[in-house]
Image (cartoon, rainbow, N blue to C red; front, side, top):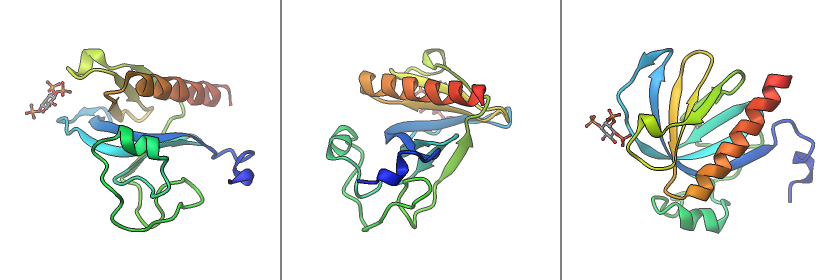
Length: 149
Ligand code: I3S
């Protein structure tokens, strides 16, 4: 439906609901605070939204039990495919980032650990192993592409 997006370097590689907690900021350890987030992987960024866009695929809605129906009608913002009008909660630059399993950092299952160059660290978690695996592959592909640039 958005053919112009195909050649766009900021094409959305993946988006969907994940449980997220930040565990370090600039190298300083933070107390965990797990919460649901709508996560968008696009360009060189991983962007976190409080709410999913209204046009999110219904399968993703069904998978993310924590997501109720959107309370407002929102449209995609052209740059990051997040809900326009709802600003991202946060966004990280994946250039030079390190990606690893996070099983040693959490009792939860299916956890990924991302550490960015400035020392911000996040854990991403899904109860659905295939989903988390898909995120792992997508993130690894983006980070490897950025390493080559
Ligand atoms: O790695 P930790 O510190 O054992 O993480 C758990 C704690 O942060 C806990 O909070 P409080 O210690 O503030 O009560 C959280 O509720 C847990 O979810 C954290 O562990 P998991 O294994 O869920 O990442």
